[in-house]
Length: 139
Image (cartoon, rainbow, N blue to C red):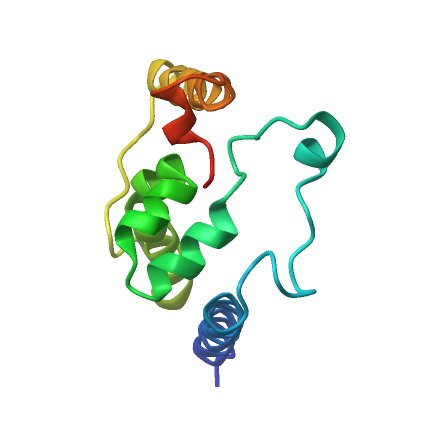
């Protein structure tokens, strides 16, 4: 008997177990008030918010149904989340079935640079201490 299907099922079960455990921790333990979450090193050292600052707090709020609060923590993560989840699902299904089940678009170099520039712009804008840019900082 070929061990590949069993290995794929094990891999899927492992991924789902780790993802489920991570979601449980993020749901059950509020970031900022538990020991599970390390502080952002960039923010600790510089006092500025990195592009990822507020992501854990935003996911915690999202899992509790607070969409507005999730966007207030990190709008970039909330906008990117559906695309990231789709890409992860596509890769998990590919690992499970041994072939591509969900199509993934090719990302051109130009699109990659655009995404990079958007993240850098978000990083800069969320650290400008004046309205409306202060809305981009986690709060």
